[in-house]
Image (tube, rainbow, N blue to C red; front, side, top):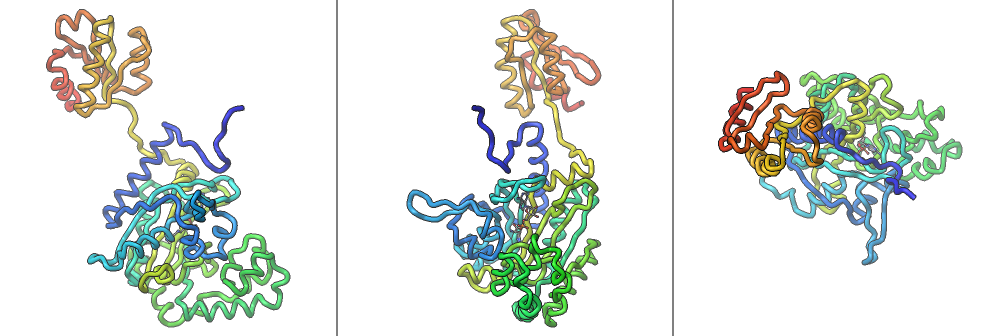
Length: 425
Ligand code: HAM
C-alpha cells in the first residue's frame, strides 16, 4: 500500500515553494513598512480559546475544529484561525500595558478546518493575518484594509473587489437583532436546523446560511445599515472617507456578515473577480472585534484585523495569469576532468559557498558533457572548469554561460577573481 497525504492537505514541493516564499517575504516587508510586528503563537490552544473567541454558533466551532483530548485529559484544538490566539496572547502577556499603543501584530502559519475540500478550500491552509489592538480610530480600519490591498496590488493582481459593511456597535446590533428575530420568527419552521438554533443565539448568522440562501425572507431581511446609531454611522462614514482619500475603491454590501461571531462595526472582504477563479472568490476577510479582548479576560480594548490565505492568493495569481518574478538559477557550477581535479572541487565549492555564492558540483560521476548539461539545468550563470593538468598549473577556466566568454584565472586567487568577474557581470 502506498501512503497518501490526508484529504484537504497538500505537499508544497521545490519549484512551487518559491512562490510561497515570495508572497511570505512580500507580506513581511509590507508589515515592516506598516509597522506590524510578528507574533508566533502555538499551533494548538485550549479548545475554549476558540469556542469562546470565534463563537459557538459559527460553522468553525460547530463543525470544523480539529479537537482532541491529550494524554493529560485536556481538550485541545488545532487553531482554525489566528485572531482568538492573538487576543489570548495579548491578554496573557498584558500587552494592553505596553508603552507603545496600539499594539500591531501579524502572524503567518498553518490553520486547520475540517471543511469539505474543493478548489481554494483546504483542511490545512496558511493564513497571513494582522491584528491592531488598542485603537478605535477609523483611520486604523483604513490602514488595515490598505495593507491587505497593498499585498495583492504588489503582486500585480488587478481584478479585485473590496466590499465593506458595518455591523454596528452593541446598541445598533441589539436593535438589528430584535428586528431580525421579528422578521424570521413567524416562519422559522421553514429554515434549516442551524438557522433555528441561530434565531435566538445570533440571528445575524442566519443571513450567512448556505442552505437557506434562496429563501424569500433572506432578501427582505432588515438591513443593519438601517439600524446603525449615530456613532456607528459616523464611524462607518469616516472609514469610507479615508478609503476614498487613499484611492481604494470599495462597495458597501449590507449583506456582508462574516462567518465569525466576534465582529462589530467595520467588516470587509476582498474578492477576486477574475474569470475562471472558481466558486470561492473570497481572498481575504476581516473586521473589527471591539468586545473580544474583554470577553477573553482583558480590559475593554478595541481591535481590528484581517487574514488571507496564501492558497487563495496563488489561485488568484494563476487566474490572472501572473508569473511571480522568482529568482532561479545558481551563480557557479564547478565542473571537473580527472580524479585529482574532482577531489579538489569539494574544497573549492565550499569556499565559493562561504564567500556567498550559490554553487554546485557533480555528485554522479558524470562525464564533462553531462556536467555541463547539469549546469544548464541548474541555470548556472558561470561554469568553472578544472582539469588535472590545470590543477598542476594552478589554473581554472571560468566560462559565462550567456555569452560563452571564457577566462583563465589562478586557483589560489579563485574566489577573488570569480568575485570580480561576477561583479562585472
Ligand atoms: P476567515 O474569513 O474565516 O477569517 O478567513 C480569512 C481568510 O482565510 C479567507 O478569506 C480565506 O482567504 C482563508 N481561508 C479560510 N478558510 C480557508 C480554507 N479552508 N482554505 C483556504 N483558505 C481559507 C478569519 O480567519 C479571521 N480570523 C480574520 C480576521 C483577523 N478578522 C479579524 N482579524
